[in-house]
Length: 94
Image (cartoon, rainbow, N blue to C red):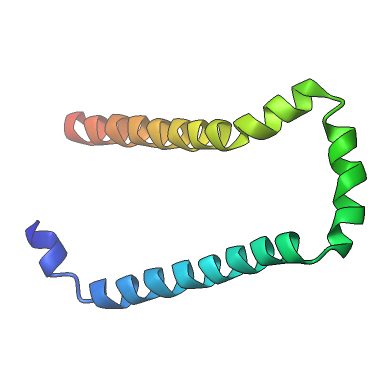
């Protein structure tokens, strides 16, 4: 906990974190409003969705993509931690 108080860039990072999240929220709200209120997009998305719903496996893959992406990221972090631990053990013994 003491290391967090000594970080001179903490306030700047928090400010950037908030700014980037506000930009992402604005973009998401714009996309949501565009899909909700712009009727011309319905002519584009309706045939696309009807085609996608014909392939159940594709729909399942789309629904599971956030879960699969998070699992891949977790697996990459786990491999990185294992490599660091092996390197630290090698440095202590070597």
